[in-house]
Length: 113
Image (cartoon, rainbow, N blue to C red; front, side):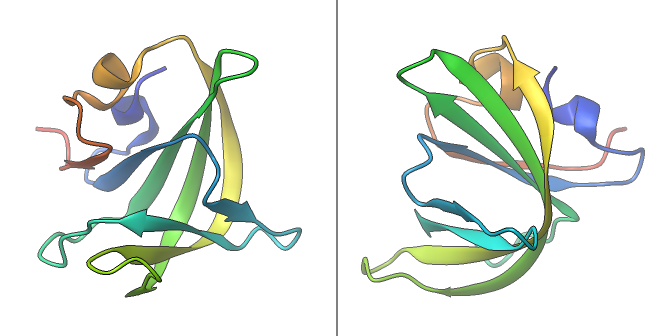
């Protein structure tokens, strides 16, 4: 599974790489992920979180609807609110292949062309 596989024809996404320390998921499927350098010039329909579990070596993938962006306790960083969080599964893909990205942990994917 790759991030683009989770997008519909005209959908865009922000894709985030995390070890999960700042990923918070509540029982009501809301939550947040924090300490990101986010650009407010990008619009996106979905949030895709790629969570690498160092202990198990698995890469879990979560889908969510983006919520509010608020200031983090870390200067220059933001907290992204999440809604309707669901686990999309596990991927064998590394970050670079999964997100079509380099080493940056934030990737914006536009609609398929």
